[in-house]
Length: 125
Length: 216
Image (cartoon, rainbow over all chains, first blue to last red; front, side):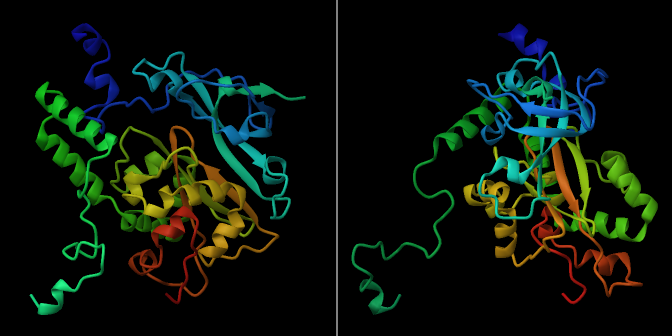
């Protein structure tokens, strides 16, 4: 127990001194990302048990990569006091509101943008 | 106390204050958990009570006036605005604002073509280091669920009407980024000082549920 605490000690996790060191939610300098802005993607329609930052209402929905935010630790394991590795590229994905909601009342140009980690995105032809 | 004090409403505690004390009644499971974890962190020497108090003070020092100052500066300095949108963290540091390392920040700019609105459907992610503690409604299930499904309906309830030829772009901040809206500088503010401009930039303007007005 004591060893484990040392392994992921307070400094690494930003506890107590979160404003002077790199916290768990800061971008990591891992350059490779599978998608580029403009790429057509689909949100994976799979179930997950536990903590997950991909909203249910987007499962299986088609969108387009708007931008690449960088690489961040995986919240699905980070939430359980693991290091959140391998880190995941994080994208801003743009959706058309009318493709998300059958009865969307607004104009066809309305959009929704959501930050989604790479392991939740699939190629769309 | 007056004699009529005893003639309280039947079934009600006549001594009950008009507003419930925030710590009245049994603690919720999360309140118990917070107290227990806090006590353990102190006991094990991970944190001191002074550090906890300092962090609470830091959060309390952050409020919408800070965000308004940033917006007003962006309105008066075009080059700063560009830097603010391109690299929010670095631009805020120019103004002496440290947003910490717990999240990255992005500024989304309203234009004649796009109106931005911020929500967090999963919980209540909010740019606290710039705007302070979020309003209660921001955390409500109604705002969080309705803003993604019917943003124009929600905006209308805030008194904001966006023309149909303007895109409403909702940002659901689900991950490591916090968003703040850079509203458009309203007409009738030419020559205003940054201080005067900052005064019309309300918290809701930076969430996207209000528009700044020169007349307010």
